[in-house]
Amino acid sequence: MNDLPKTVVWARQQFSLRPLGKETGQYDEMAWAIWRGREFIGTIPYVQNETTKEFEVRFQTWVAELVG
Image 1 (tube, helix red, strand yellow):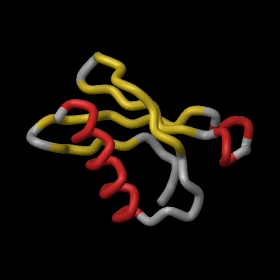
Image 2 (tube, helix red, strand yellow):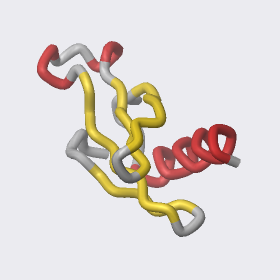
Image 3 (spheres, helix red, strand yellow):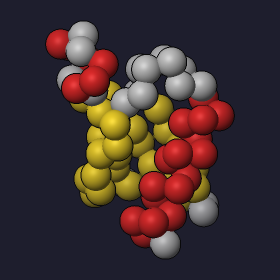
Image 4 (tube, helix red, strand yellow):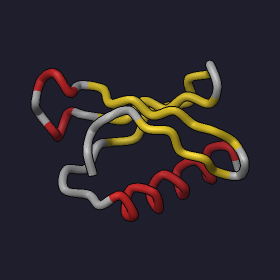
């Protein structure tokens, strides 16, 4: 999966994801910053070589635990 900004829809809510730490090139230091509308709600780690499907499952689990 690439490290470009993304939009993900979960439970009819739109979330914007932007990569953080990309400029360092250190994948273990990268994360996804996540917004719901204009509200910053958190970060999740960037996982190198993760497929889009794997990311979607991980994101859905994360956001379900956060906002239920």
